[in-house]
Image 1: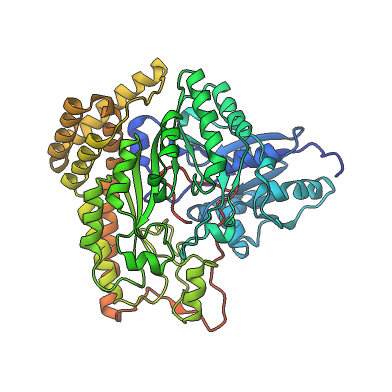
Image 2 (image 1 turned 180 degrees about the vertical axis):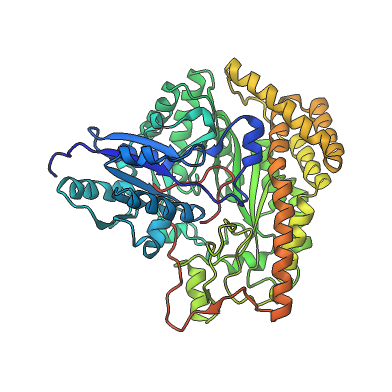
Length: 560
């Protein structure tokens, strides 16, 4: 490859859709941050560009993109996830209006390249595999092209992200990544289709190098490992956890960690002990449903035969706060699942539950099966409205076996019940009692402690001003103070999240009520404006790889 010519590159992180389960705007405001997670994908891409190139980063979730920013650049680069699609397209338009070439990449661009046909460059697949080819073409004078990764790269090729480009103090947490891929075969999941079933894992020294880079920049606090399944390769992750434990201990515990893992982690006492030693405090777990037939039908067999409540309580005893994902709409559902799902959530005492409607992501086994059965619909994806951002407010892009209105009614019932104040704070109270956080540590700078105290005052004002919330909140707070003072910070964090979840759940119930009315008026399979795909047609969207595009942070595990 010839030497890279000098270039000024503007990296733009697109704005996430505002009406999303994961858009914690109210929570960020009360804790003095601008957005939940930093754009790990773009700063990873930045590290793959030539050192001679001059880089700037603008994250539209925390700041505005100006014409002056665009005019400064020789090249604009952007990309991201499905909920960012509309803003990516708007950024393309703005760059081209001002005469600047633009390159797009990341998860949604890889999955749906046809939607980005107007971009000058489309970079598809994991960045480590394809960025050198793009840089060579740009250096040789190319000003348009499509670059496709041919394989899944070895993560030894993944550089330390350019964290120095981030305004770190504006985010609730920062993401890192240990592995990509998952060994399981869940029918509805696109990770195995797009990142493979053989988990690729970074070397321990590479993970430590990334922690060192964050630490050197002065960052302290929450770090999320954004792996789709941290324990996909258990043997490879054990030495990494040991190294992380040594690292945080030697530096006085400047970070606390979260991640995503499968439910079978509960059966591995050694891994749980290692995670405790490494200062992990939270995990996201895909439970999906308590219906064993639905789990088997969806090929999520790793959850079949496991006692959900017992497994979750094992996590609590290991000091791990649990967030969980649930899905309504599986084919194997024979009758209402609402009562069983709510009972599962209550018995396991899981406050934060991402409950979604089943969505057939393209190129997944689910989408292929539904297409073969002539049940998959076209014209109804999660981008039909700028108010639709996740599979909570969308979903069911296929003909359901149960009457559609019954599935939607189940979904509405779950959302209404689990985010009612007494229920939510009751689960918080019970989870806090069960949580064993002895040994968990986090050294916080005085400025952060002062910020937390100000946030606590704001949260209290909001909670006490809301009559229906006031009593449940005070009971949970009092219980934590009396029984488990060390967990008060976690309890208050849950209250801050509830400032987002309560209005979001209320709006979601209103939206689903409208969809129920449409389904009842148009028949059990009515889908707003959608028509079945013709035989042999491909789904409207491609799958979305969790690659170097924009990995999700804790609680942001939507398969989009």
